[in-house]
Amino acid sequence: MEPAEGSADELSALMVRYQQGDGRAFEDLYRALSPPLRRYLISLTRNTTVADDLLQETFLQLHRARHTYQCDRPVRPWAFAIARHAFLMDRRTKSRKGFDLFPEGEAPDLPVPPEVEGLADRQALSKALRSVPKDRREALVLHHVVGLSFQEIGATLGIRGGAAKLRAHRGMVMLREILLGPGRAGEAG
Amino acid sequence: MTAPAITMSDPKMTNENETALPEALRRAIYADLKPVKPLAPPFQRSILLVPWTLLALATFWSKFGLRPNLPQLGAVLAWGLSAAQLLLALMVAAAALRESTPGSGLPRTTLWACALGALGFHLAGLALAFRQSPFPSPPGLASVEINACLYYEFLIAAPLLLIGLWLLSRGLSFRPATAGALAGLAAGLLADSSWRLICPFTFPSHVLLSHTGPILSMVAIGAALGALIERLRPDRRR
Image 1 (cartoon, chains in turn red, yellow):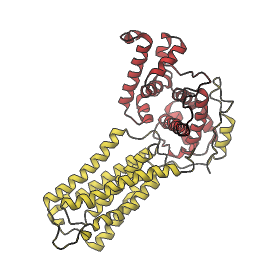
Image 2 (cartoon, each protein chain N blue to C red):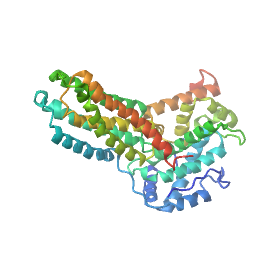
Image 3 (cartoon, one colour):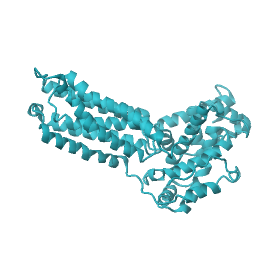
Image 4 (tube, each protein chain N blue to C red):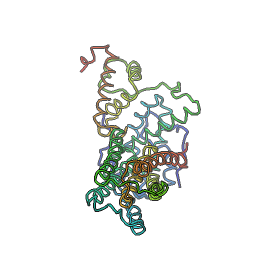
């Protein structure tokens, strides 16, 4: 599992400096948060161009809402919740205007959990991940790809940490079943 | 001043260099990089609702006096239940304010439990008061006088709801209708916690219509206004 960049305390200290108007702190925060946020947004949008647009929108929303961050709370669930909201708002706007929610074009390179990387080639893994129901896939990606704890995932998604763990586990079991066939999911460890 | 919206994909943002800050984003952030004061924790912010509640109680106490059957109810069923309902309402308000802080909203089941628990406590308080002192409708009293409670409960609750919505609007709610409904519930419960010390009637047809009714109305109004305010905010429109 790849940990989300930056320790919780470092991120919290950066956020406090950012709230005080320190531009360098914002840049450091961007460096620390943009890769995991981008991976998460790619898994949601299935399109790198849309994900990059939403990454910028996320940081703009994060900037407007920077006063809502409280220093005794972790930064990552706060930032990921804003990213998720940016995605949902974008999807709602596009849906209302009749746009294609998952436009083709750039090949959607879904981030894949390292635990299953050896089970098939990248394209098959990406296709299998797309077959996992959305809520399970989201918890799976946030834990196994982005590296959030289940508590952090719970805070991001507005569910209990236990429910996040269950979703991620069921998602992983389903992913293995798709790749290996039913009944052989446990064999891959 | 709000940062200008960026909707175009920045060509500098590539897979190889995903940590590079796009120039357009940097400009937008630096154009509006003033220090901000972080919001206080939710429960601390919810305390702002207390002064109006106490002011309303003091005003109506001096105008109408306390309920005449207060001695029959006893301190626990009168003052104790009111104080407990006030505390529960503040907890509901804090849950609403958590909704306006990204990444700290409570799970849906917890919110339901919190809301239904607070409403259940209110109903149990009404039932206990009726059991202890079944204060009937006095003969000759017009229903409009009995249901004056409706008017006064709304009079106390409406400003509380506005304060709650103002507190919510300072944050960023992802479920604005839910947050607004909780703010409405808190406003209704707070209003009733003070008005129940004034109104002597305990018969169910009165308390359910004139005491529980306004609380439920506040929930509906809060949900509608919460969603509306969030939609009308200029920096949230896309």
